[in-house]
Length: 458
Image (cartoon, rainbow, N blue to C red; front, top):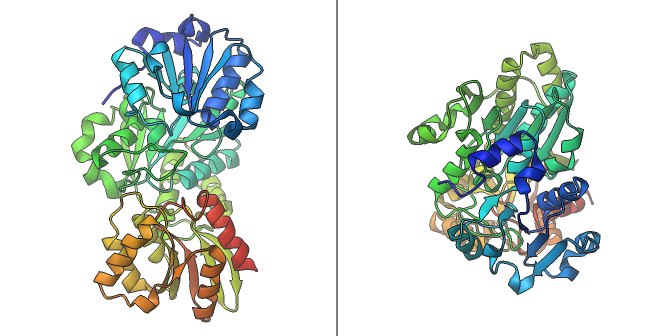
């Protein structure tokens, strides 16, 4: 499904970097003042764009804090906050949507009926970026690790390279520093992709599992109403590709994507599988992430020696099956980023030793039956972290007669670690891999992982 994004003429304006001509006298609204729209706003101000810009956000000025104070001093910036945040969006000519703002929001849908233009900071970046050496990486899991590894390989090969996107760095923040021969690596979420109108020259899809099919994050309520819509959003990473472009696809998911061939552009399709190169990364699926990076490196003609060196020195990302500590012969691993059952199942198959698993949290509409079977086969003790999804996990475990005494409930991280230590033996693995979102007990997956590491090391 396409949305009313820039017309062909507007695209040409953008790609010729005639930003002022593209914006003209349009009334601009920024939907949400998150990381990307903050960078966009700063960029427009630095470019001396004179348009009236309205910030629409469900939070109050107090909740926005420093962000409100920083931008409120500009007379051209107006505010629609709290209950007025999504009303009368048809008052504007162009809406720049934060990834967390759902396109199916009634305010946006009403604006689209009035032919208001829907755009995004990522669309703008891809249109204005002076280099065409852009690599986009997406997938349900592994996209951050893969994007970071590709970045590391390019740096090891002594290329000038930039890293941004869903990894937490808005690319518009470094747009003015990019040169025509530089490289850019972007981690792209499904929410950044769903209204993307430009595809990177090199696109990577690490994997595809059911995720984001129900709202979970109160500050990021976006979700996909069906798995098909989620797949189509992901395929936007390649939909606009030409025959001179490249689309790298995990061979395990080619059958799943076969019915959607017409949505994946005309770029050269290259499949990849797991790599056997030695690395510091734990987990079989990380070998697939390395395989993706190696496949790109071959197209870039980076020598095998450089690739091998880069892979062996790459330390991975925080909270992604990260080794934390070893105490009394017990090893602790943090994969707080594992927010789907599929991710946790893959984690369980990454170790041969007995596992004590910390699992559960906020419900995202996932199917927990396969996870329950995996827990029964691999986990000696499943410590349940309280949350809406936890009840469903417990019910599935009860159905397959995984003893109730083997799934104690913990209402805090210190309590969970205490239970783990009491039951762990020499050679065991204590693994935080929750299969659920963090919201409820924790602010986000980072806080959850940081608390796990804090109390594991105590």
